[in-house]
Image (cartoon, rainbow, N blue to C red; front, top):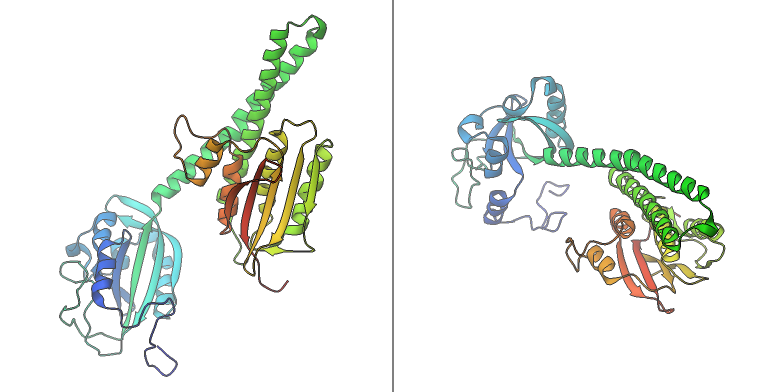
Length: 392
Protein backbone atom coordinates (compact mmCIF):
# COMPACT_ATOMS: atom_id res chain seq x y z
CA UNK A 1 0.00 0.00 0.00
CA UNK A 2 1.12 3.55 -0.70
CA UNK A 3 0.96 6.26 1.94
CA UNK A 4 -2.46 7.27 0.61
CA UNK A 5 -3.79 3.74 1.14
CA UNK A 6 -3.76 2.65 -2.50
CA UNK A 7 -2.08 -0.52 -3.72
CA UNK A 8 1.25 -0.02 -5.44
CA UNK A 9 1.92 -1.61 -8.83
CA UNK A 10 4.57 -3.93 -7.44
CA UNK A 11 5.71 -5.27 -4.12
CA UNK A 12 9.14 -4.31 -2.82
CA UNK A 13 10.53 -7.75 -3.62
CA UNK A 14 9.61 -7.48 -7.30
CA UNK A 15 6.34 -9.48 -7.47
CA UNK A 16 3.30 -7.70 -8.94
CA UNK A 17 0.68 -6.64 -6.40
CA UNK A 18 -1.97 -8.48 -8.43
CA UNK A 19 -0.07 -11.77 -8.16
CA UNK A 20 -2.64 -14.39 -9.13
CA UNK A 21 -3.80 -16.88 -6.52
CA UNK A 22 -3.03 -19.94 -8.68
CA UNK A 23 0.68 -19.22 -8.26
CA UNK A 24 0.19 -18.60 -4.58
CA UNK A 25 -1.69 -21.90 -4.31
CA UNK A 26 1.16 -23.70 -6.05
CA UNK A 27 3.68 -22.19 -3.61
CA UNK A 28 1.69 -23.15 -0.51
CA UNK A 29 1.06 -26.68 -1.78
CA UNK A 30 4.70 -27.45 -2.50
CA UNK A 31 6.69 -25.51 0.09
CA UNK A 32 8.35 -27.92 2.52
CA UNK A 33 7.92 -25.64 5.51
CA UNK A 34 4.80 -25.87 7.65
CA UNK A 35 2.51 -22.90 6.97
CA UNK A 36 -0.45 -21.74 9.06
CA UNK A 37 -2.87 -18.96 8.19
CA UNK A 38 -4.47 -17.42 11.25
CA UNK A 39 -6.77 -14.59 12.25
CA UNK A 40 -6.77 -12.73 15.54
CA UNK A 41 -10.07 -13.04 17.38
CA UNK A 42 -10.10 -11.44 20.82
CA UNK A 43 -6.29 -11.26 20.57
CA UNK A 44 -6.06 -15.03 20.07
CA UNK A 45 -4.58 -16.44 16.82
CA UNK A 46 -7.30 -18.69 15.41
CA UNK A 47 -6.20 -21.17 12.75
CA UNK A 48 -7.96 -20.59 9.43
CA UNK A 49 -5.88 -22.94 7.33
CA UNK A 50 -2.83 -25.20 7.21
CA UNK A 51 -0.79 -26.55 4.33
CA UNK A 52 0.09 -30.23 3.71
CA UNK A 53 3.59 -29.75 5.15
CA UNK A 54 2.08 -28.66 8.49
CA UNK A 55 0.19 -31.95 8.71
CA UNK A 56 3.38 -33.89 7.95
CA UNK A 57 5.70 -31.92 10.23
CA UNK A 58 3.43 -31.39 13.25
CA UNK A 59 1.34 -34.54 12.89
CA UNK A 60 -1.98 -32.73 13.38
CA UNK A 61 -4.80 -32.92 10.84
CA UNK A 62 -7.26 -30.18 9.84
CA UNK A 63 -9.95 -31.51 12.20
CA UNK A 64 -7.57 -31.05 15.15
CA UNK A 65 -6.39 -27.49 14.57
CA UNK A 66 -8.76 -25.59 12.25
CA UNK A 67 -10.80 -22.93 14.04
CA UNK A 68 -8.72 -23.58 17.17
CA UNK A 69 -6.23 -21.34 18.93
CA UNK A 70 -2.82 -21.86 17.34
CA UNK A 71 -1.15 -21.30 20.70
CA UNK A 72 -3.27 -23.91 22.45
CA UNK A 73 -2.50 -26.41 19.70
CA UNK A 74 1.28 -26.14 19.44
CA UNK A 75 2.73 -23.89 22.16
CA UNK A 76 4.02 -25.71 25.28
CA UNK A 77 2.51 -24.26 28.49
CA UNK A 78 5.85 -22.94 29.75
CA UNK A 79 6.31 -20.91 26.55
CA UNK A 80 2.95 -19.13 26.56
CA UNK A 81 4.53 -15.80 27.52
CA UNK A 82 6.93 -16.01 24.57
CA UNK A 83 4.04 -16.79 22.21
CA UNK A 84 2.02 -13.85 23.54
CA UNK A 85 4.96 -11.52 22.92
CA UNK A 86 5.20 -12.74 19.34
CA UNK A 87 1.44 -12.28 18.90
CA UNK A 88 1.71 -8.70 20.15
CA UNK A 89 4.35 -7.99 17.53
CA UNK A 90 2.17 -9.52 14.81
CA UNK A 91 -0.87 -7.46 15.75
CA UNK A 92 1.38 -4.39 15.65
CA UNK A 93 2.23 -5.24 12.04
CA UNK A 94 5.78 -6.43 12.76
CA UNK A 95 7.44 -9.45 11.18
CA UNK A 96 8.74 -12.10 13.58
CA UNK A 97 11.89 -14.16 13.06
CA UNK A 98 12.97 -16.39 15.91
CA UNK A 99 14.01 -19.87 16.96
CA UNK A 100 11.17 -21.41 18.94
CA UNK A 101 10.16 -24.73 20.48
CA UNK A 102 6.74 -26.05 19.58
CA UNK A 103 4.66 -29.10 20.48
CA UNK A 104 4.16 -31.72 17.77
CA UNK A 105 2.37 -35.06 17.87
CA UNK A 106 5.80 -36.63 18.50
CA UNK A 107 6.93 -34.20 21.19
CA UNK A 108 8.59 -30.80 21.42
CA UNK A 109 10.79 -29.83 18.48
CA UNK A 110 12.85 -26.78 17.56
CA UNK A 111 11.77 -24.54 14.68
CA UNK A 112 12.77 -21.37 12.91
CA UNK A 113 9.57 -19.32 13.10
CA UNK A 114 8.65 -16.56 10.66
CA UNK A 115 5.48 -14.61 11.42
CA UNK A 116 4.18 -12.43 8.59
CA UNK A 117 1.25 -10.13 9.45
CA UNK A 118 -1.31 -8.76 7.03
CA UNK A 119 -4.51 -6.81 7.43
CA UNK A 120 -7.87 -6.87 5.66
CA UNK A 121 -10.31 -3.99 5.69
CA UNK A 122 -12.74 -4.32 8.59
CA UNK A 123 -15.92 -6.11 7.57
CA UNK A 124 -14.54 -7.25 4.21
CA UNK A 125 -15.63 -10.72 3.12
CA UNK A 126 -12.53 -12.76 2.35
CA UNK A 127 -11.57 -16.23 1.24
CA UNK A 128 -8.90 -17.89 3.35
CA UNK A 129 -5.66 -18.49 1.49
CA UNK A 130 -5.81 -22.03 2.87
CA UNK A 131 -9.18 -23.79 2.81
CA UNK A 132 -10.65 -24.15 6.29
CA UNK A 133 -12.33 -27.50 5.59
CA UNK A 134 -9.58 -29.43 3.86
CA UNK A 135 -6.46 -27.63 5.00
CA UNK A 136 -5.51 -27.26 1.33
CA UNK A 137 -4.62 -23.93 -0.29
CA UNK A 138 -7.58 -22.17 -1.87
CA UNK A 139 -7.59 -21.68 -5.63
CA UNK A 140 -8.50 -18.60 -7.58
CA UNK A 141 -12.17 -19.61 -7.72
CA UNK A 142 -12.57 -20.20 -4.00
CA UNK A 143 -15.80 -18.93 -2.54
CA UNK A 144 -15.68 -15.92 -0.27
CA UNK A 145 -15.12 -16.83 3.33
CA UNK A 146 -16.52 -15.39 6.50
CA UNK A 147 -16.57 -11.73 7.35
CA UNK A 148 -13.24 -10.56 8.69
CA UNK A 149 -13.45 -9.34 12.28
CA UNK A 150 -10.97 -6.47 12.58
CA UNK A 151 -8.78 -7.60 9.70
CA UNK A 152 -5.72 -8.72 11.70
CA UNK A 153 -4.37 -11.84 10.06
CA UNK A 154 -1.04 -13.47 9.47
CA UNK A 155 0.97 -16.42 8.28
CA UNK A 156 3.17 -18.54 10.53
CA UNK A 157 5.96 -20.41 8.74
CA UNK A 158 7.87 -23.11 10.63
CA UNK A 159 11.17 -24.62 9.48
CA UNK A 160 12.09 -27.72 11.46
CA UNK A 161 15.55 -27.24 13.00
CA UNK A 162 15.59 -30.39 15.12
CA UNK A 163 17.87 -32.30 12.74
CA UNK A 164 20.03 -29.20 12.30
CA UNK A 165 20.48 -28.98 16.07
CA UNK A 166 21.37 -32.68 16.26
CA UNK A 167 23.93 -32.28 13.50
CA UNK A 168 25.48 -29.30 15.29
CA UNK A 169 25.70 -31.39 18.43
CA UNK A 170 27.42 -34.20 16.54
CA UNK A 171 29.88 -31.74 14.99
CA UNK A 172 30.56 -30.31 18.44
CA UNK A 173 31.38 -33.77 19.79
CA UNK A 174 33.65 -34.55 16.84
CA UNK A 175 35.38 -31.22 17.28
CA UNK A 176 36.03 -31.94 20.93
CA UNK A 177 37.52 -35.30 19.99
CA UNK A 178 39.77 -33.70 17.37
CA UNK A 179 40.83 -30.78 19.52
CA UNK A 180 41.56 -32.74 22.67
CA UNK A 181 41.87 -36.50 22.23
CA UNK A 182 43.60 -36.50 18.85
CA UNK A 183 45.75 -33.48 19.65
CA UNK A 184 46.93 -35.04 22.89
CA UNK A 185 47.77 -38.31 21.15
CA UNK A 186 49.68 -36.49 18.43
CA UNK A 187 51.70 -34.64 21.06
CA UNK A 188 52.45 -37.94 22.80
CA UNK A 189 53.61 -39.61 19.58
CA UNK A 190 55.73 -36.61 18.59
CA UNK A 191 57.43 -36.53 21.97
CA UNK A 192 58.08 -40.27 21.90
CA UNK A 193 59.64 -40.15 18.43
CA UNK A 194 61.84 -37.22 19.39
CA UNK A 195 63.02 -38.96 22.56
CA UNK A 196 63.68 -42.17 20.65
CA UNK A 197 65.82 -40.41 18.06
CA UNK A 198 67.82 -38.67 20.78
CA UNK A 199 68.63 -42.06 22.30
CA UNK A 200 69.93 -43.38 19.01
CA UNK A 201 73.33 -42.59 17.53
CA UNK A 202 72.75 -40.81 14.20
CA UNK A 203 75.94 -42.28 12.75
CA UNK A 204 74.89 -45.82 13.63
CA UNK A 205 71.24 -45.38 12.66
CA UNK A 206 70.17 -47.61 9.81
CA UNK A 207 69.08 -45.55 6.74
CA UNK A 208 65.77 -47.39 6.64
CA UNK A 209 65.16 -46.64 10.30
CA UNK A 210 66.00 -42.98 9.68
CA UNK A 211 63.56 -42.86 6.77
CA UNK A 212 60.81 -44.43 8.87
CA UNK A 213 61.47 -41.97 11.69
CA UNK A 214 61.28 -39.06 9.26
CA UNK A 215 58.00 -40.40 7.88
CA UNK A 216 56.54 -40.60 11.36
CA UNK A 217 57.70 -37.07 12.10
CA UNK A 218 56.12 -35.75 8.88
CA UNK A 219 52.90 -37.62 9.61
CA UNK A 220 52.71 -36.07 13.06
CA UNK A 221 53.12 -32.59 11.56
CA UNK A 222 50.30 -33.29 9.10
CA UNK A 223 48.03 -34.47 11.90
CA UNK A 224 48.78 -31.33 13.87
CA UNK A 225 47.82 -29.21 10.87
CA UNK A 226 44.65 -31.22 10.29
CA UNK A 227 43.62 -30.83 13.92
CA UNK A 228 44.20 -27.08 13.81
CA UNK A 229 42.27 -26.71 10.55
CA UNK A 230 39.36 -28.73 11.93
CA UNK A 231 39.27 -26.45 14.96
CA UNK A 232 39.29 -23.37 12.70
CA UNK A 233 36.45 -24.82 10.62
CA UNK A 234 34.38 -25.39 13.73
CA UNK A 235 34.86 -21.80 14.87
CA UNK A 236 33.91 -20.49 11.44
CA UNK A 237 30.77 -22.61 11.28
CA UNK A 238 29.58 -21.48 14.71
CA UNK A 239 30.66 -17.84 14.74
CA UNK A 240 28.02 -15.15 14.34
CA UNK A 241 28.37 -12.52 11.61
CA UNK A 242 27.64 -8.86 12.37
CA UNK A 243 24.96 -7.10 10.35
CA UNK A 244 27.51 -4.90 8.60
CA UNK A 245 30.82 -6.83 8.47
CA UNK A 246 33.86 -4.91 7.29
CA UNK A 247 37.61 -5.21 7.48
CA UNK A 248 40.47 -3.43 5.74
CA UNK A 249 42.11 -6.17 3.68
CA UNK A 250 45.40 -4.29 3.28
CA UNK A 251 46.73 -4.41 6.88
CA UNK A 252 45.35 -7.94 7.08
CA UNK A 253 47.48 -8.98 4.10
CA UNK A 254 50.52 -7.13 5.49
CA UNK A 255 50.17 -8.96 8.80
CA UNK A 256 50.02 -12.37 7.12
CA UNK A 257 52.98 -11.63 4.85
CA UNK A 258 55.06 -10.35 7.77
CA UNK A 259 54.27 -13.31 9.99
CA UNK A 260 55.17 -15.96 7.40
CA UNK A 261 58.20 -13.98 6.26
CA UNK A 262 59.61 -14.27 9.78
CA UNK A 263 58.61 -17.92 10.18
CA UNK A 264 60.10 -18.94 6.81
CA UNK A 265 63.14 -16.69 6.19
CA UNK A 266 64.15 -18.62 3.05
CA UNK A 267 60.84 -17.82 1.38
CA UNK A 268 60.39 -14.68 -0.71
CA UNK A 269 56.94 -13.16 -0.16
CA UNK A 270 56.10 -10.32 -2.57
CA UNK A 271 53.28 -8.07 -1.40
CA UNK A 272 51.27 -5.96 -3.83
CA UNK A 273 48.52 -3.95 -2.11
CA UNK A 274 46.84 -0.54 -2.42
CA UNK A 275 46.72 2.00 0.38
CA UNK A 276 43.51 0.52 1.77
CA UNK A 277 40.65 -1.63 0.56
CA UNK A 278 37.68 -2.43 2.79
CA UNK A 279 35.82 -5.66 2.16
CA UNK A 280 32.54 -7.04 3.49
CA UNK A 281 34.07 -9.56 5.90
CA UNK A 282 35.47 -9.81 9.41
CA UNK A 283 38.98 -10.45 10.68
CA UNK A 284 38.21 -14.19 10.30
CA UNK A 285 39.22 -13.64 6.69
CA UNK A 286 42.80 -13.66 7.96
CA UNK A 287 42.51 -17.41 8.63
CA UNK A 288 41.75 -18.05 4.96
CA UNK A 289 44.63 -15.92 3.71
CA UNK A 290 47.01 -17.56 6.19
CA UNK A 291 45.97 -21.00 4.99
CA UNK A 292 46.67 -20.13 1.35
CA UNK A 293 50.08 -18.61 2.10
CA UNK A 294 51.07 -21.55 4.30
CA UNK A 295 50.01 -24.07 1.65
CA UNK A 296 51.97 -22.17 -0.99
CA UNK A 297 55.09 -22.44 1.18
CA UNK A 298 54.99 -25.94 2.67
CA UNK A 299 53.98 -27.67 -0.57
CA UNK A 300 56.72 -26.02 -2.60
CA UNK A 301 59.83 -28.23 -2.96
CA UNK A 302 62.04 -25.36 -4.18
CA UNK A 303 64.98 -24.37 -1.99
CA UNK A 304 63.85 -20.74 -2.07
CA UNK A 305 60.09 -20.69 -2.73
CA UNK A 306 58.39 -17.52 -3.94
CA UNK A 307 54.91 -16.40 -2.97
CA UNK A 308 52.94 -13.44 -4.28
CA UNK A 309 50.17 -11.94 -2.16
CA UNK A 310 48.04 -9.40 -4.00
CA UNK A 311 45.06 -7.28 -3.03
CA UNK A 312 43.28 -5.38 -5.78
CA UNK A 313 40.02 -3.65 -6.54
CA UNK A 314 38.22 -5.56 -9.27
CA UNK A 315 35.24 -3.24 -9.72
CA UNK A 316 33.06 -0.86 -7.76
CA UNK A 317 31.43 -3.85 -6.07
CA UNK A 318 34.15 -6.50 -5.90
CA UNK A 319 37.78 -6.95 -4.91
CA UNK A 320 40.24 -9.83 -5.11
CA UNK A 321 42.81 -11.24 -2.72
CA UNK A 322 45.14 -13.58 -4.60
CA UNK A 323 47.93 -15.90 -3.47
CA UNK A 324 50.27 -17.25 -6.16
CA UNK A 325 53.43 -19.34 -6.04
CA UNK A 326 56.11 -20.98 -8.20
CA UNK A 327 55.49 -24.47 -6.87
CA UNK A 328 54.09 -27.57 -8.58
CA UNK A 329 50.50 -26.33 -8.41
CA UNK A 330 47.46 -27.69 -6.62
CA UNK A 331 46.67 -31.27 -7.70
CA UNK A 332 43.46 -31.45 -9.76
CA UNK A 333 41.82 -33.83 -7.31
CA UNK A 334 42.32 -31.34 -4.48
CA UNK A 335 40.93 -28.48 -6.52
CA UNK A 336 38.01 -30.29 -8.15
CA UNK A 337 36.41 -31.63 -4.96
CA UNK A 338 36.42 -28.12 -3.51
CA UNK A 339 34.91 -26.49 -6.60
CA UNK A 340 32.33 -29.25 -6.95
CA UNK A 341 33.66 -30.48 -10.30
CA UNK A 342 34.21 -33.91 -8.73
CA UNK A 343 32.24 -35.70 -6.06
CA UNK A 344 33.88 -36.71 -2.80
CA UNK A 345 34.54 -40.46 -2.90
CA UNK A 346 36.91 -42.93 -1.27
CA UNK A 347 39.37 -42.24 -4.08
CA UNK A 348 38.74 -38.52 -4.57
CA UNK A 349 38.50 -36.59 -1.33
CA UNK A 350 41.56 -34.42 -0.98
CA UNK A 351 44.30 -34.73 1.59
CA UNK A 352 43.40 -32.00 4.06
CA UNK A 353 41.00 -29.30 5.17
CA UNK A 354 42.97 -26.23 4.12
CA UNK A 355 41.11 -25.45 0.90
CA UNK A 356 37.77 -26.27 2.52
CA UNK A 357 38.65 -23.85 5.29
CA UNK A 358 39.31 -21.13 2.72
CA UNK A 359 36.18 -21.90 0.68
CA UNK A 360 33.78 -21.92 3.64
CA UNK A 361 35.32 -18.80 5.14
CA UNK A 362 34.91 -16.81 1.93
CA UNK A 363 31.42 -18.15 1.24
CA UNK A 364 30.39 -17.09 4.74
CA UNK A 365 30.84 -13.50 3.54
CA UNK A 366 29.14 -14.02 0.19
CA UNK A 367 32.37 -14.42 -1.75
CA UNK A 368 33.88 -17.16 -3.88
CA UNK A 369 37.16 -18.97 -4.50
CA UNK A 370 38.66 -19.55 -7.94
CA UNK A 371 41.80 -21.34 -9.13
CA UNK A 372 44.22 -20.48 -11.92
CA UNK A 373 47.80 -21.04 -13.00
CA UNK A 374 50.34 -18.46 -11.88
CA UNK A 375 52.72 -16.72 -14.26
CA UNK A 376 55.54 -18.62 -12.53
CA UNK A 377 53.93 -21.94 -13.40
CA UNK A 378 52.53 -22.68 -9.96
CA UNK A 379 49.07 -22.12 -8.56
CA UNK A 380 47.10 -18.91 -8.16
CA UNK A 381 44.12 -18.93 -5.80
CA UNK A 382 41.80 -15.94 -5.84
CA UNK A 383 39.37 -14.92 -3.12
CA UNK A 384 36.65 -12.75 -4.63
CA UNK A 385 34.88 -10.63 -2.03
CA UNK A 386 32.37 -7.82 -2.02
CA UNK A 387 33.73 -4.38 -1.27
CA UNK A 388 32.41 -2.64 1.79
CA UNK A 389 30.82 0.54 0.50
CA UNK A 390 29.89 2.22 3.76
CA UNK A 391 31.62 5.22 5.29
CA UNK A 392 35.31 4.40 5.17
